[in-house]
Amino acid sequence: MTTAVHLPTFQSQLAQIADAERRGGWLSVCVDAGRYLLLNRQFVEALAACLSALPEEPNIEVCAGGGELAVALGEYGVCVTATDADPPAGSPVLHSSAQEALVRYRPAVVLGSFTPIDTNVDKAVLSCPTVRHYLVLGVRLGGEFGSAALWRTPGWRRQALPEVARWMLTRHDVWTGLTGRPILQHGEAWCFSRECNPSPLLRKER
Image 1 (spheres, rainbow, N blue to C red):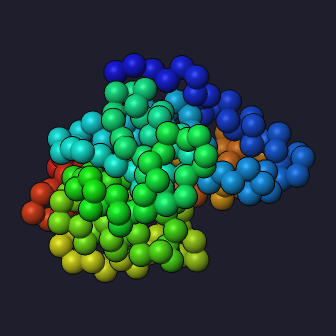
Image 2 (image 1 turned 120 degrees about the vertical axis):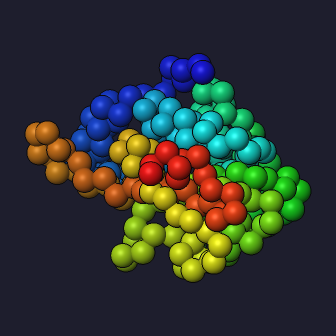
């Protein structure tokens, strides 16, 4: 497994957030940049390890935006096909809605990072017969994480991935300025696996 040396470290990003708070505010900076998730070495390495533990392929990412996450995972040896309904011009992301990508690629593993909850993406992924595992990154807003489909679709087991979440930095994190715990993190990572095909991640946690 190679190392994405161009990625900043978790600690260096804390300094970046602190600087943003001294200026216009961290959330404001993220909104202006269209940023939901910051990528750092520890986070991408942890996520790559989780994906590598799943033997099934192919892997796709839905609602991938500019594809930065898929590119970073590729540098850690995890091949993920990034798809988006409206990717930025010049990006490596394939122009495809989530529903179209599921039909075209028939993936076994799907990655979703901050997928819109009002577009039925989660429902489409969990309804796709080839999908065995759905790794979801996001935050809990209004007391709920993701769409209702994640929690109400029968036949799926859910497992939190704290080893990934511990390194997640998002636009919703809050800088406290306190020594030892300068930031309150709100990012969560979950693996949803079909009950007939339990995840190695689930078995490992037992």
